[in-house]
Length: 512
Image (cartoon, rainbow, N blue to C red):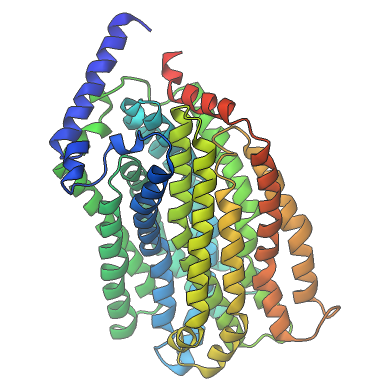
């Protein structure tokens, strides 16, 4: 790189810092009550800094994740459970199937494609290369939109495919309507997800938290109640509420970027002038997205297919099927809460690795331990509120009874899940994505799934529908425990100094 080019980049980075200062997002302003700044991410390792980061960023991101992904589907299910005894179980089952299809064919691919942007941004900030954020943002959105087109086409055949897999025709028709409308929400969600990752890494976690609260609880709660309870729109109302929520969230993020002056960092002309689509970066995108998607297919897919396995249990009733769908929705809400802890552990660890900070290893395990303790406390609270929660989800007493029988498995699932997923955050950014896929595949498909399916879909072990239902929803807990043990072995053998070199060199790849 020439001296002139280096000087230009330094001027551009200075302009970026000036824009952030004008927005009030500097260390001095932060001390007077403003949101966090890029300087906060540049703190070196210390136990005090890590705890402050965990609380200051992990908790707001946890809260935002619950509002984004946990509350909306759970609220839909609870409202659907109070529309009338005859229709509630039917609508809840339809929403359960719709959630299954949408997550597998839309949310799962999107999360996998976000692996590129989510993993490069913390390293860039840690390495002092904030000037590359606009290029990464535009590149990731463009490539993600292109790859997602075939998945959007699948939404138009959702009902046909699910009916062929054994889903009742009425439920399948509802799923078809829901998924077609949700294409609009899915496209808007691509932009929202990228903006949220960028803003969180740049320190605006409190704003994203409040945005998620207003849209995920306030607007979503209002729209879902009005559309389903007042207007009686059923599955149409559930989909329309999601669309309104995503559009309102997009408006909120754009308003922040304009008001705070952050809109400038999304214009490549004002920062590092690098090509948006290059062969190297396209390979980086592919190299992170494909292993992430394969890992999701090897793990997350098993969880989503639980509802289909429940459908095929011999002698399953509509009430027990609704209870299974409720369990899946509750898991989604609790899993969303864990997203904040997982993301904060990943962001902080990659940030320290980008700085080549020798304390990255200690910081990571501290984040893991704090996350596990928080989840354990939440599990105790859940168990103490079990009776109240069972009465809230539906007016049908038989649904209460079935849901209560499998509720305790939710706490076991969540405890193993947090340790499993926190310990996977380094595989993809360090180029070991296929190893993660292999570990996930063995844990879920080779060990856990055969045991669960043997219990649930045959009479070799038991004839009890309750035990079979428990085997379906408990399958993932077994797999997550096994995967965590594999992950722990890998992390104990990891060369953290070399890992820091990899993250730092990727952040400065444009200078090579």
